[in-house]
Length: 171
Image 1 (cartoon, one colour):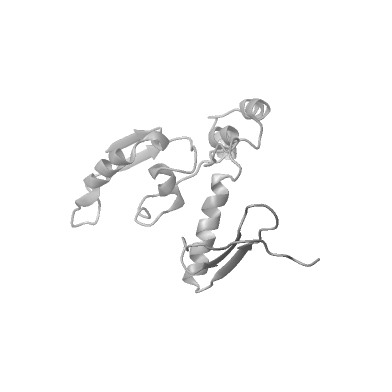
Image 2 (cartoon, rainbow, N blue to C red):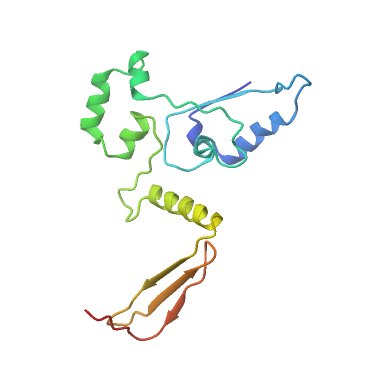
């Protein structure tokens, strides 16, 4: 039996070693080993996040998210503590989402584009790609040293085509 506390910070190599213990089995269909991984969530990264995201190959983990309401009802968190953390950290910040709401949330205060947006865009692209959709995008240069860029996406990381000079757009 493996008990994994603060699972969000456990390195992938440790997860690999633990999951290696699940390779056996008995005729009754029950595994020889069990694991319980618990943690408050952190940034949307790492094996603990991948397990909760139900990433390919990790669907055999049973996932249980405990809500703030459940934690209050169980007497594990007081409503006053949750309200004080909202005042201290702000309801829109990652620490509040991670430690009070029990949700994976990135600390994107220093980022121009939040990591969660990138993850959603990648998932959307994969859905479009599987459906056979293609995308054409353009970044038209006007003045200065920039070049116009046209991207015809046939694969996730398609090369971009550049044209020197400027392009005029009427209007």
